[in-house]
Image (cartoon, one colour):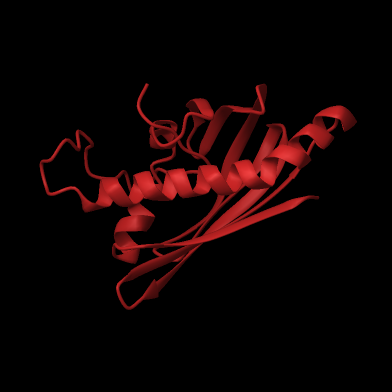
Length: 163
């Protein structure tokens, strides 16, 4: 399986970063590449993303939630993928490491995604992480119309600004 890895530093506490990444449905607000994320079960989500103009669909299930360190998922249908966010505390915040493995059935699509995916995922990851960091840096009551994180909610990979 092809693997994409990305690591970045966020100036926020590890517990705050973890709470935000477990709000899976909110990822749709962090990246234009994510069209929709719909909760379809207790720890299951249906994703629709667009890479290189090609819509990709997959259902994922959260397989590990170990606050505030690890958050993992595995696809159940659609594009085969699995991944993990690993959060490490550092002096002035948190290092977030994303590891994503995927497999596509269509050789033409595989080649297109292979050529576009790594730089795109790295760009998306920077976009997502930047938006997550901006969300975490907001002063209390500043535009964050989110309720407290649902401790049972969990999330996979992706993001997008509000449409």
